[in-house]
Image (tube, rainbow, N blue to C red; front, side, top):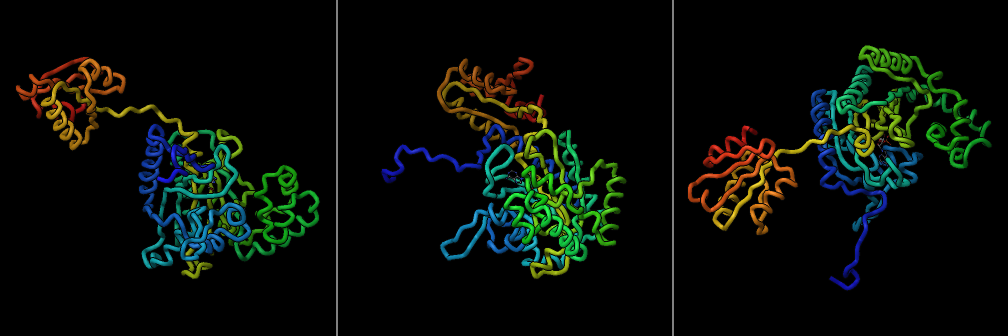
Length: 421
Ligand code: AMP
């Protein structure tokens, strides 16, 4: 080690978080629930690399989006390629489908993914530079029934985790047929009100006026409220699609509100967009957001296959799930003397092989000290081995909840512990 590093603490990077052993259990509960529920709807897990060619996101997420303009972790690798740590997941899945010809498999294809995303955002509560998303994607289903099904699935997932105070917001952002004429109207309206828009939004009038609706500045929001609404400019196909989508939500008994200003911050959406927000999170109130992206696969040079999906922020979700304190049952092995230690180590191995968490510690301690440790760690049982027991081939087992203590041979001890009594 060079002197440069001697006794030097190197802190974590701003906007990143360690997930410590005490918190990991909560992550696992959510991940297991996601896996179980999504798989019950026919979704299968997909995993793609953390970094991709920068172009993939410039093209997919969109060159005029905040993500691409301001938030990407882009770097040049040693081979001179421009790479980007994924800021969102959809472009990666689309790339993988085209590259691996997954489109030749029966459709619709349903995929889910859980993993980290990277955005150079301004760190604050609910907004990090490395954060985690649960991502859902369906390819090859045009029927608005699937739009309603995934909203229902998201709602069910949140209900299963006992998340309350949520609101489902839906909208349609039209398609390549009706959007151009709407954008023209929007551009004209924004041009008229230009002086009431921030500098950034003034620029968006030309580049992508839809993005004005994403601006969080109050004057812009108030001005944009009076702009023409996309819902009034939908073509017949989009209108029918949206109404049918809403009717399927009604069929599922889902409560939702239509917000014509919900355009979401990504360029590729067509027709349906939706978000689930909560009053429990403060400023960063979106738990998940998604929509349809019917043109994306084709735009990437792939087959003409439509898509729809959503991404849910794990950190935000974990903040509002009411977790119950759940303690894993485990055995603490206490021993006295060298041969007892060896017998205890062998028993610990057998108990672990049977799936029972077992703790044996190797620092020399008195029996009382070991019992105190077991108490403090809230062990469910203490298995006590002494030289006498080793000679007899027996073990003492104390149930820490009832205080009951028995002396049994190896097989019986294993059976008691396996039965959880
Ligand atoms: P988006 O990909 O921007 O549509 O975001 C989908 C979801 O990811 C949001 O609703 C948030 O829950 C979560 N999310 C997005 N950006 C961040 C961030 N910087 N930090 C934490 N969570 C985020």
